[in-house]
Amino acid sequence: MKIAKLRNQPFLLLMLKDGEHEGLFSAALMQSFQQQLNDMSLRIASDHLSIIYADQIKKACEIVLGITNLGLLTLCDNDAYKAKQVIKTQGIVYCFRAGWSEYNKLSKVSPAFFDTVAISRYALGMHDMSDIFVLHNGFIKEGYKSAKLVDVYKNIAASYSATSVFVDHDEDVLLYELQRFLNTAIALQLINSTKKVFSNTSYQTFNELLQSTAVDSLCEEIDVAIERFSEQLSIPTKSYLQEVGLLAFTEFKSIIKQQVDIEIHIQEILELPITLANELHGDFEGGYDFHADDEDDIAYLTPDEY
Image (cartoon, rainbow, N blue to C red):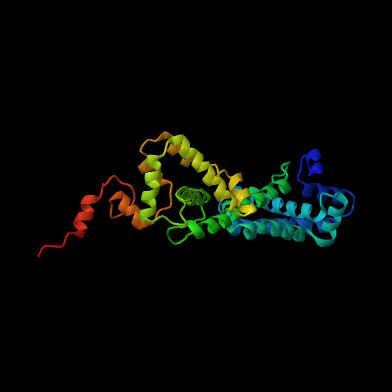
């Protein structure tokens, strides 16, 4: 990409121009390359874009340029001489396939993250100086982080999920639920429970601890519980949770320190079995709705009059 930045064009186009100028690529070969690029662009437009609009055809051409450019850079490691030899001996389609193989790695690293990356992100304009290689490696890095999130989520959920585990592909949802599992782990540590899921009895014990312990002392106990729990984690899992900030337990500590409606708010950040949540809320349907549907609940339980 250093060469491309100096001359204000994607690396692939520079190599084609240089090769033609140096007599390395014949007129017939250049025409063949142009036809192949056109054909691949139409295929991309047909498979991934709407070909009704002319600007979409242009976008398809830019995607083909970006993917092919990525493939060429992967094959030649930014070496201009090697790049021209690859183009001459292997052809443009070979470079595109190499780029497509790189692009497709995302789907193997993290299918969920791959679905969020539009192929148009790989588009390169005629005078685009963007480093497609850096862009792609950034996506790969994010893909690994996404895959790690799913792996850690499944691992923690296997112990602390109160219901059957359903892995949502939305990373925000996964992070939210993962924090609930971790909060539950710390809450159970505070009452020295050997169980991984709250029961009615253990939750009442936890609630009594919240009401009977001074805030400062409780915060100290939370820090001890966090340290004890963290020691049980594998190094990769602990490192990941620290990286995304889930071992800070910011919300948990905030609720404890504020002491405002603590009985209500603490329930919302813990993973509780549905039956226990219903008992705590006095609500047949579950969910803290301030008993808004109690009349419907009672009507449901009342036998029909004949």
